[in-house]
Image (cartoon, rainbow, N blue to C red):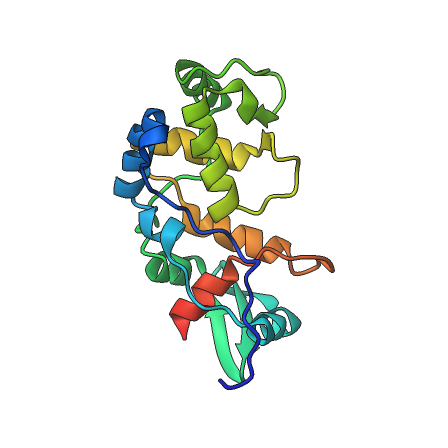
Length: 203
């Protein structure tokens, strides 16, 4: 392990604190801390640059028993990243969760949450929300998603995840993370680094 360069630019860690000057956000912070994604948002392993390079250099998608997985090597150790692996190591317990549901249900719940954005297209903007819900979305974007659009915009996947969390439905974050990782295998620029946490917990 000597001489390894540490890597700081992986997914952010949520700072779920409650300073007095942010009393209006305490309820959202309490909710996130008690949710099934609390560990995923706050785990902060040591990441090494060379390990990430090896992961992406060796990573390929395979199908095992009808399910897609990522196979790779880090320090000559074979690794298989699957939805089940992510679920276990990030303590998500969401194998039975959903990744989508009818569009009408989605917008109905968003409307009850105070969202007044357009409903004819799947584009969502957090600045339409109250400050508390903006903080909620912002936390999901920074800590648990692959973010490629402008920071004021959030994806339909995050919208589904937000609604599931707000209505006590189980969302399959494990599958979302795996899909995000697989989508980056052909990306030449900065990649989605959530794999850092998964690999660290898998070794």
